[in-house]
Amino acid sequence: MDLESVIIYWNKQLISIRRHIKVRFLIQWIILSAVMISCESDHDGSNWFGEDVLTICQYLEKNQEEYSKSYRLLDESKMLITLCGYNPYGEDYTLFLPTNEAIDHFIEQNQDYENFEELLLDTGFIYSLTRYHTLNRRVHTNEFPDGALKDRTLTGDRLTIGFYTDGDNQIIKVNKIAPVIKSNLEMTNGYIHVISEILPQVEISGYDWLQQQDNYSILAQAMELAGIRNRLWFDEYTILAEHDSIYLRNGIMNIEDLINRVATPGIPFSSSTNSFYKFTGYHVLGEEYYLNDLNFGNDNYWTVGYIQLMINVGVEIRINPGVITYGIKISESGDTTVIDYVSPIWEESNIRTTTGPIHSISDVLFFQHFP
Image 1 (cartoon, rainbow, N blue to C red):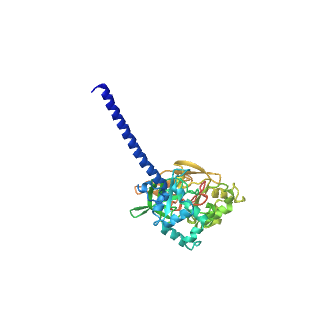
Image 2: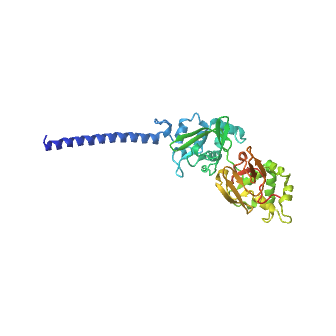
Image 3: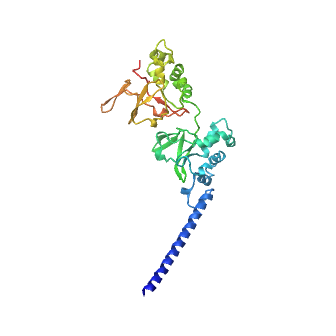
């Protein structure tokens, strides 16, 4: 074969290859276009690729029968359309999805609604309720803390997470009331965690919560006498609260006993120079601190009593270490540990209010040795 014949032959081969590439590219483009059209128009959940390419709203549409009441709540509150797209202000969404039974239980316990249809008519409430169940980022259970989630809901609130054991099973509860019964349902625009109770929003401040508790009456009266409410000029604060039984254990039966123990005679209780005011204000930190927000190691936190409070976070949380000796603990091996700190009582901490958390503590908290 001469040179001219070779050139003609290879030109034909190159033309054939180019035609093959063009045809293959055209086929791929047609398939891709079909997929894009399907994703844009398939709002009834009938996506033929499976659930892993559904948005949250498409999943709910596909499972309307199972989650019919949550679906209607989200639809009537104009939240469903939000969950069809992507979050312009964060990395997708996380939806805590109540079951139908959870919604029924909520209505049974709520005197404002006779039935589900009446609940739907309260548009302002369900608008807030559905957004309170939606985080502003996709959050897998691997990221759940034992405390408050860093990511806020679409209402600007923080939800708390707790881990509990039931035999060999571990249970995750949201806001201490709603068990997660299905977790990490992954959608293209976030996660769904199915819960068996509704998450009601809190509507009370930390100060007012304390005033309504019969079992924290001594500290509540102390705060009232010290005029602490007038010093809470910031939006968020944290209260460290002793149960009345803690005071009784220390020989303080009522507010008069506390006054006799700590107050400076002849000075108004609300004066910042009175030890009674300092004692009471020492129980209020000037910012929002859920237990998992506290800094690792030793750190000082300003209180409303204008005195810094030290908290040590390590294997355990030690509040005000080294000031007062509360007792001595002897281990089985004979090692002696001096208890010179106050601890949070985990089961009664991270109590949510509109102004920040309340933590129940193990002993009387004082900035110096307790008189």
